[in-house]
Amino acid sequence: MHRRLIYPLLLLFLCLSAAGCGSVGCTDNQNSIPLAGFYSMSDKASIRPDSLAISGVGAPNDSLLLGPSARASQVYLPLRSGRDETRFCISYRQRALDFPELNDTITVAYASIPYFASEDCGAMYHYRINALSYTTHLIDSIGLTDSVVTNIERETIQIYFRTSDNDDEEQD
Image 1 (spheres, rainbow, N blue to C red):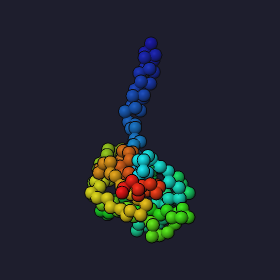
Image 2 (cartoon, rainbow, N blue to C red; image 1 turned 90 degrees about the vertical axis):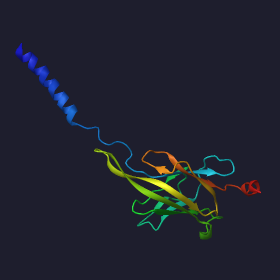
Image 3 (cartoon, rainbow, N blue to C red; image 1 turned 60 degrees about the vertical axis):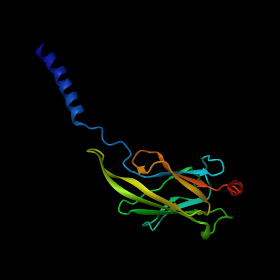
Image 4 (cartoon, rainbow, N blue to C red; image 1 turned 30 degrees about the vertical axis):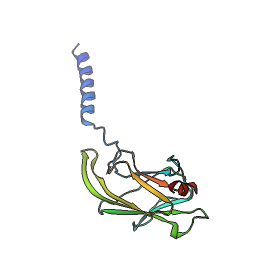
């Protein structure tokens, strides 16, 4: 009788101690990177431009973030925590638009904010965007949906492109 009681208690003790020592770990996104979406200025609809290349300006090594063969409606624009400004170059690789003088540049000015997430996740940076500037060759405008960039996956930058000749007529 005594042995029958010891085995279930021992099994219960082992299960509880294993559950108490383990941790769930950090499964959340550990990077704070602004997500930019692409939109048509004419109808404000999300678009997937073709032949678009986006790269970091002055970034070390290969900084191609979006290649001209990829058709995407969004792109992550990583900021450098050791700087207060990061620039991105958008080049249009369609044959009629593939001229360096048509490239657009986006400049993001920001403050890096150290953030301690948890013991499992550790520390990361959040960013507060102070200013956005851009050239307007094929970009019409840029919107900022939230100036604080955290590790929550959400679109914080909206890039509006001129997608037809009608855009110029609508502005007049």
